[in-house]
Length: 179
Image (cartoon, rainbow, N blue to C red):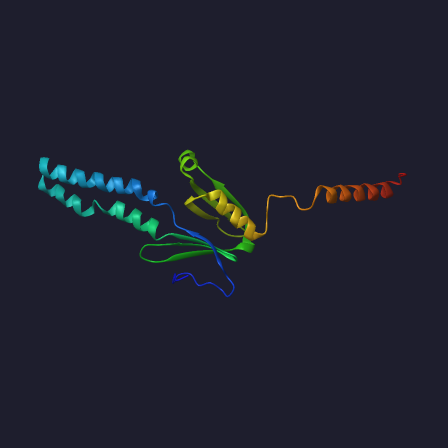
């Protein structure tokens, strides 16, 4: 990986990486366009001082765009990273052995268009949220797989029946019951 903000340890392999969806910046871009229209309309109808609004009109859209494009999420076989920041860089690292739980969620639009969020619960720390990512259920499954958990019950049915019979035999011995 050529990212200067991410220094991987020996043997650490990138399993997944993404950025938030660019559509996350759309509302702020729409606000900027509305401000530009208001500035031009205001200068023509009311006063030429309204053209001063043109200087600040692009700021909301530019900020939102830069915020989205400067956010990265990286999952390796050892840790989960979130990089954010426009002027400075803030990197949050969560070692996978500190992950207690993870959940994924999708709203109505997220379900329709295949995006959502994943929240990672961290032992003794602040939770980490991966927002506006595509396929959040798959990302959550990757995290759980790397943490070493799965939703499957370990062992076969026959093994669990054998365990049950052993426990019943122990209980009969303790209670003094005949076989």
